[in-house]
Image 1 (tube, rainbow, N blue to C red):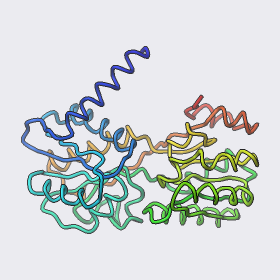
Image 2: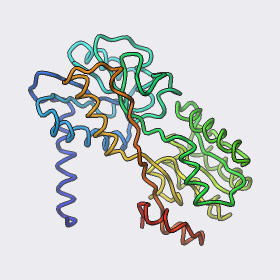
Image 3: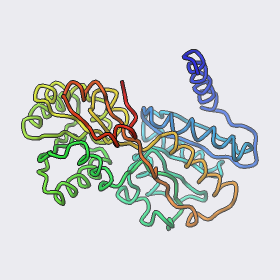
Image 4: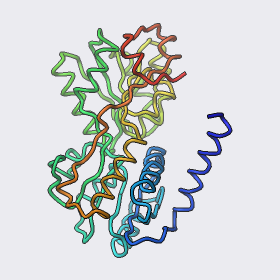
Length: 318
């Protein structure tokens, strides 16, 4: 497919999402997708969700409310939807935490969020015990560290970039700390509240570690350029838990496919809302084969060599 065709396709998808922002298709069953705050991940998930629904449940009405400015406004919209919809998808970890605290007459769905067990939403992912199911971008930490150890076998000191008051910080921090403990790796963390604090903390962290991990906290993966000067000065590679950080300068990363997450989320919503399955019969889904991403420019800059089997499997960012 040529560049022009790709551009036209992308424009069509975004046009559809824009049209869906306040409108629904006529149908017997209706669901709403919503999230607050800016997030390109949720846009990709929603796009894949919509097209999968067109394949398997073309009469399902899908209303999308994107990037609601505040949690307070999102809560108001949620309760308006609760009166008129047959199901609500509330994306992001903040949304999952909100759903854990409410009781509704309709089924609820999570997506674009970290481990729902750690977020206090669902205890049993195989047979959800309440009124909530969906998908998670969570990847078991032992699987993440299999990739880290394959790429950086000599690492002895790891530092992770978190974010103050972000719901993902505790999850990514504790999971990384546990794996470091099992593998005999020294663990460090920084928990800045903004970019300025991140730059200062990253400079100190780069003096103490062999590898810096970029967590799934927005401040971390959106501001890789604030970490790179200190890391590059000392030839410290960055490994990311979020896809976005790799094109921005992280050396490598592992991430669930947002498109795959959107399609699996649509399957779960249709199973419950259209086909009438009980929530307990619809497990929370994870990406069974997460993407490994490699930044070719960074491995050349750092003069690193990665195993052939990893390079053949990985998505190479040039």
